[in-house]
Image (cartoon, rainbow, N blue to C red):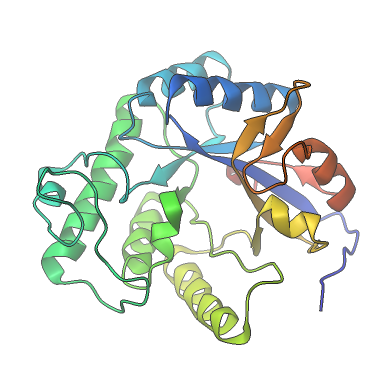
Length: 259
């Protein structure tokens, strides 16, 4: 059954662009989406080549408080030495290569310690650039892995910031998957504190799922030929901005720092 939109004063939406810092072109695209008001938040990859460029843009264009940490365990090189030596998480060249099954229920202690140290290193690199992340999510949703989730949630609680919950809106979430996500989200919320209740993608909105209340839309913006913005989750040529206006017409766009 599809959720229907109930208009209340509490209806707010965080439209978060993942992967800020990936490369200079994507940084500029993200900045332009901020300027157009299409997105209201972004999350930063601290180990990517264009990280410092993204930090510079954040300072120059008043984005502090709207930038979170996009914790990365799957792409590029780690920032901590201990992580580079973990064969479950990195390859022989010291590059991220996650060997943990999506169904894994635990991490060896050495690997769990390395995850914490890497999270600390990525967080600290943001602080070193004068940017304190507003919240934490992750590249390729690694913080939704059962043994990684509590590490990220406890770290976030120590920093006093929210964690993105697992996507829980959409038509392709079967009963077993929904049960797992519900347990995972309760675990994250219990350890890290409150967060946004509903998490979805632009594709979910396109399919008619429009939850009431506070929503996070996980976006990966693209640039359309006419200068508008699309999204990796949407069909070619589909405007992300027009979709948001149709699907969530009464939702005010905010950042995590405005919750």
